[in-house]
Length: 140
Image (cartoon, rainbow, N blue to C red):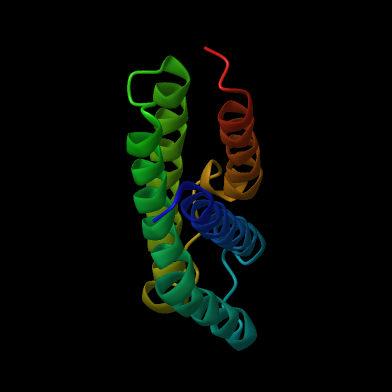
């Protein structure tokens, strides 16, 4: 696949993944401890969306990003190592949010997530912004 097409795929997948994570983070924060039927239905819908859209977008973004890094010869560059560390942190947060959605929608609707997890939306947004700035400027 040529570089511009692969870059477009990477950007579209990353935007889908990050927007899904921000939405999940907002839902976890706003619906924490909610036992209403509407709240549980919304969480169940978000969980399905996470399974069929957000998580595959994560995999596509990682795959396209790794291919871009190999094609461009960026593996040894320090900015990419910082970016990868931030991406891995977001992957871990994605897993944590996915588990929280499952727990809140099916297992224990009255469960209140830890305070740190309720900050997932702004943390995701700020981390994604830092990743984008690293990719655009390639500083080091």
